[in-house]
Length: 326
Image (cartoon, rainbow, N blue to C red; front, side, top):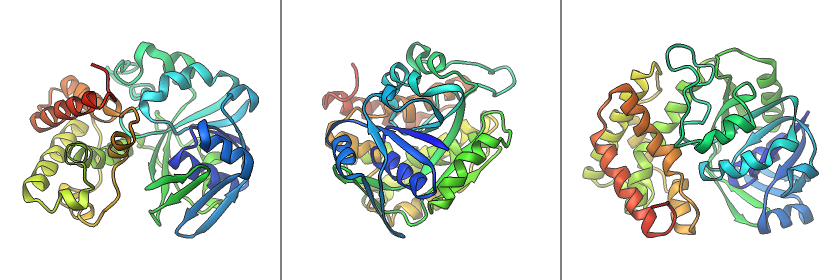
């Protein structure tokens, strides 16, 4: 199976290596020194279950890689317009496109059913760029649990011993194309669950991002440091509760409780990716992870006072660093 990982950074690089180990014909779209290193030496992943060295076709030009059976988009939300502009050469008539990203996805209301069917989310997909370039029929949902980072060009270190993807069709069907993506991931040693409730999985992961991300940006610390302060733990609890109320109002059931998240966070020294972006001067995923939730809260009529305040402060912090538009 020909699979292209579009955006082979930390999570994308890990996924690409697992796919290659599992027998897929893998290519990657990447850029900069990371791309050069992969072209010269291949992709090296240091994981808890052992090192993986994968030789993958790598380019910054999708046209050089040709049409694929599937594409997994692993960029962060601010890069989606550039993906929309470049992805066409990878797409054949039946190419599926999975979006391995945090936050509310651009396709959220595609194949949703009910009165919100087909509703667009301009904060996530400005100008309907992804909707028009990829189309909702190709879209597959994917949620990643993989704490990792690029430690040097061409080298990814994975911290989580139980990394996994959760894959699902927006309409809840258990499709052959999802099974075909999951198979090489599992063969490569990565968990790959298939669900008929992908939006539940999205919200479950998103509640973890919400409860830790704003506080991590403002406190510039990992959850283990933040949650040691009872006041900040209570703020995380309030954010979780507000986010869960939005999910429930939209018909989604989430796993875990605020107390479980806080307890897990107290043991974590891993900086959330949005804090890493701030510290490294990269565009921050505020719209996809935070602002889109506020948009859905207004749509569902759910008050989110704590989240409103913290997201506003995060925007001020990000603008001050030149990482979020004014």
